[in-house]
Length: 235
Image (cartoon, rainbow, N blue to C red; front, side):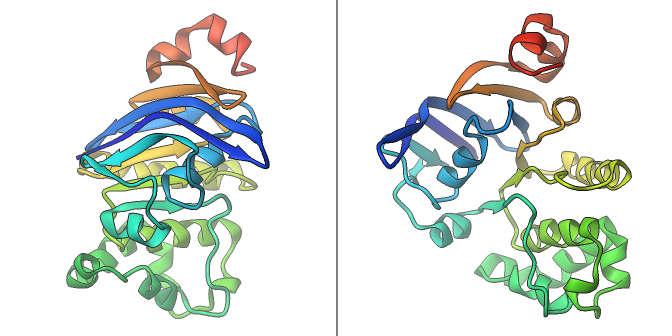
């Protein structure tokens, strides 16, 4: 399994948002896309998930071209996206929200196993499974959005700014839970405003500046690079 982005460009109203962006993600790998706000990180995830389509370049998953597919077709292949702020269905219960994630054939077959897995991963969701989602805290709703995607049996999980607006303790808890998934075949691509935390979580990182990849490498090396920290990361 691999996800490959090759030389993609994305335009909005004749303005180029992404410029010649290339990266890859292997089975079971964790990579982070880091950089300041407004450089195109969310646009990249939206393009991979089919919300936007590139004007140049290509995206392949398991050697299948996916950059012209609609979002639901890409999700059915196993490339799934938890957007920033991770929206939930507020008037549905926790359990009903999770049911909405089980929409592909493979996920339906593994429904009982998947539900048990996310309840173990996020015990608070099991405890509050009958509660209306809008009654959950912001952190619990973020956990629910992630859990709803996990029960869909993703092969690639894309997470966009999952710590946005949350207390540090809740952020730490969510990342600790995600670290449990490191031992599985699930690949994770994370866009995160907490640069240090993202790099400590990931195997490799890509530094994005004004719509382009300016640096890449092992996360531990990027954390040690004084030039990158000062020039691009604001550390």
